[in-house]
Every structure is written in C-alpha cells, then in structure tokens.
Length: 353
Ligand SMILES: [Zn+2]
Image 1: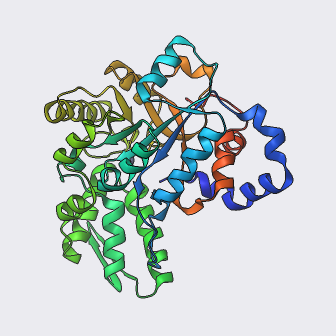
Image 2 (image 1 turned 90 degrees about the horizontal axis):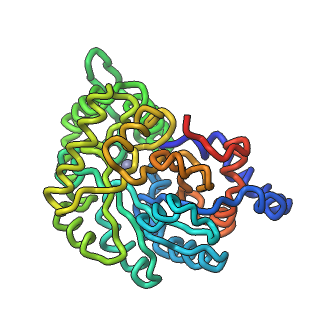
Image 3 (image 1 turned 135 degrees about the vertical axis):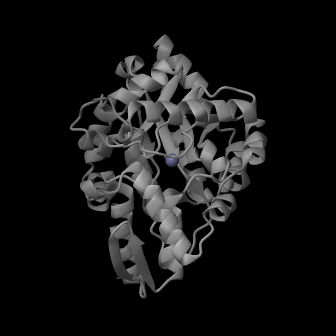
C-alpha cells in the first residue's frame, strides 16, 4: 500500500537512529503536537509462511504496548472530534494522539474494541460502505488467498495470457509482488476490479464471501457505533484511489458512501480517510473535495505528525502507520517522536501538495 517503508530501508534506518542516540537529539525538533495512528487489522500472530499483507496486521499485545508507551510519554488519547476541536481552536499545549483503523475489519469489533475499552482509548473506524455491503473487491486479500491456494496462477485477462508459478513460498511471494503491482498500479481503478474478478472466477473464489468473512457488516458497524469510545468515519463506497478517478467519479464514490452510512447508522459521517491514502491515491483536488463535502477532518497515509500549520489543511492530515512487520517498542517510540517521518519528509512539516 505504501512504499514509505521500502524507500527508507526501514529496519536499518530505525535501528541506526536508535543505536546512535540520534533519536534523542532529533526528537525535540521532530515531535509534532499531535499524531494520528493508523491501523487496519488487530489479530493474533499467524505462523503461515506466505503473509504478503502482514504489514496490515498488529497483535492486540503490540497495540496495548503502544497505548501504554504513548501515555507514558505524556501524550493524551483523544477522540477525532476532540482533535478537530483542538486544531480549530489552536489548542496545542498538550500533545495528543488519535487512534484510527481503516476499512472496517471484523477483528476491530472482536479484538481491538476490548483493548480500547480496557484502556479507555477513543478510536475511529473508517469503513467503506461497499465493504460492509460485501460488494467491494478486497483485491489485495483476494489475491493473497488465490496465490496461497494455487501452485500456479493462470492469467487470461483482456489480451494478457500468462502462467505465473506459485508452488513454493518464494514463488508465492514473487507472484504476489508482481500481480499486486499489476493490479494495484498497472491497471486503472476499473480494470483492476475486472482483473481480480477474472482471477477469482478462475480460482473459484467467492469474493463476497471473502469480504463477509473478514469485514463487519452494518450490524457489526452499528454495534461498534453504539460504543461511547467509537466513531465511524467514511472511506468511499468501493475503496478506490480517488486521485486516479475523474472528479465526478471521486465525488460519487464519496457522496454515495456518506449517504449509505447515514441510512444504516443514522448519522452523516464527519470524518474521512482516503483509501490507500498515499500521494498517488489522494491529492489537492481530493483534499478540496472532502472539505467541500463537509468533512471536518480527512486523513491520508502520508507519513507525518500534526503541527499547528495543519489548522489550515484539515482535510490533508498525515498519519503514523503502525506497520505489522515492525512490531517493536523502539520502532513505535521513534515514530511517536516523529524522527523517521521527518527524515522522510526532509524536515518539512507540511506535505499537502
Ligand atoms: Zn483502506
């Protein structure tokens, strides 16, 4: 979903920052006044060898550790509505953190909720209505399932004919990387969905059943919405990279999602997360669109912390991703201090272009 980690040579840089003490020197310069954590799934550790989407999963134990360490660092967890109030009011005296989870996975209700309750942490789930309706193609998870269950992948799609070996774990990883690049970036937003449907048909995978097995339906979202700690935000109907669509299509994806949320949950969503959320998935046109459509805050996946300057960019907020491949306290501490984020951003505090 993001090449931030790869770009940075993550593990090497993070370990170097920690070991050399550079973190202690840089942290006072790189700490923001707030941060928005981003999670997707919260599940127990799995021991499958082929887990191309493991970066989207953290364990409940790691989540608990991050909560305790964040509080021990003097940072207060607040709801997204309170973060909005502080941003608008210019109240930056105390550092704050907002917890967010994207897409609307069932484990948010079954597992993460218990952790948030135990520690009284407010949180926001950005749910795609198409995922709740099981009409949206969770293509990255479908692709994982198809490759896991087949020793070769037969592609016969709009003139492309190829057989990709997927017998060994190494072959499965290589196949995933290639096909993820093809489907996720090589094809446009509509061809991408035709391609994964064609592959699912070939493999006999029921896409709607996959969605239902992994994500909350509206009953689940209603149960979550009834929790005092929870806020439900919007995430488009079909989980599309809105920047890769026409403005009319992007608007339609967002507006229909808001309407569906309102019809099912009785409340028009006030907060929004751009699907994928990187530079190629959401840009200035979309930041303006989210503001025009009435969202109080909208979050990207651009890495960074919240600074007072973000007051005038409320629909282009950066986040701090808790990546499942790096579930170490010292990495979380570096991210909390904003050090790797600042390095990545060249010490620019605003990244909204
Ligand atoms: Zn998402």
